[in-house]
Amino acid sequence: MTFLVAFYPWIKALHVISVIAWMAALLYLPRLFVYHCEVVPGSAESERFKVMERRLLKLIANPAGIAVWVFGTLLVLTPGAVDWASGWWHLKMLGILVVTAVHHVLMARRKDFLHDRNRRPQKYYRILNEVPTLAMVVIVVMVIVKPF
Image 1: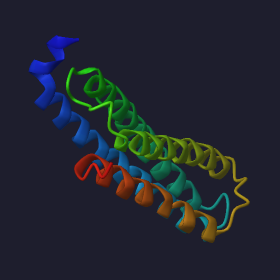
Image 2: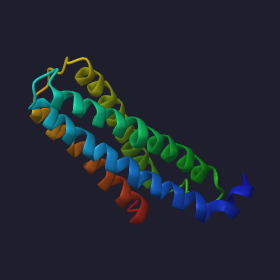
Image 3: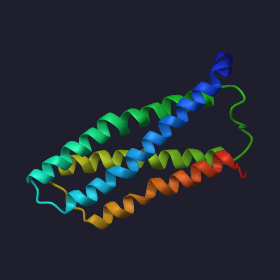
């Protein structure tokens, strides 16, 4: 995989761009769900939220999440990119898995709204909205500071 070394800056740039898009989508989608909870199922407003949620997930969140994993994997495969003897990358990986799990939870909750079956209150989505933020803080600190 030594050929990846020549492309490292580009892979890293595309990874960061993908992360920004993914996080934006994962932070906005639960907010849409909060507002969707306020409208009557089957109403014009509810149908509008369904379109917004579908587009956000299908056009931004899903492609960006896939790109994050693809470019992140390429970075990991690049010789010298990760000091495997240090421990920071374990916590970073845990953060990535948490963000990925939240993404999958949001996909399932979108299906609930799509079929007018949401049974969760606004507070659930407000709390869920904070999880990717906390994971992002952990990930960024691990990558930049590398405390251990």
